[in-house]
Length: 141
Image (cartoon, rainbow, N blue to C red; front, side):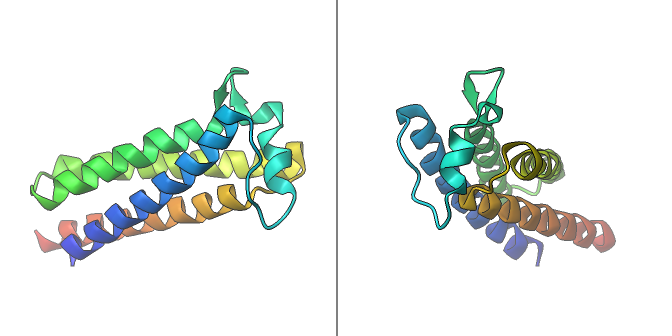
């Protein structure tokens, strides 16, 4: 069951990476984001969407999802428990990050980016799957 969960985490990481790449490229190119509401452009153009005034927030997701993708891929070829700890740590950071950014979108920017919301749900799913995998392995011993 743990291997199956790991594969799902890998797929979810790829999905998150694709979302992050799409949104990140729009930040870099300063081009509009295809969105189901007007929130994506509002968020993209907000100064809150840049760390330290220059680094686009989707770049954080890009690195985080890529990191989890690599760890979950390596985990399919190894029983090294430290890889799961890395996934758990990155997913926990990711959940804190998307929670903070969702708060920022709602209360400071006053707009919701559909892609950001999808990424937030995806990150929560990855954390839930990683926790389930952790407890399955812990109870196996």
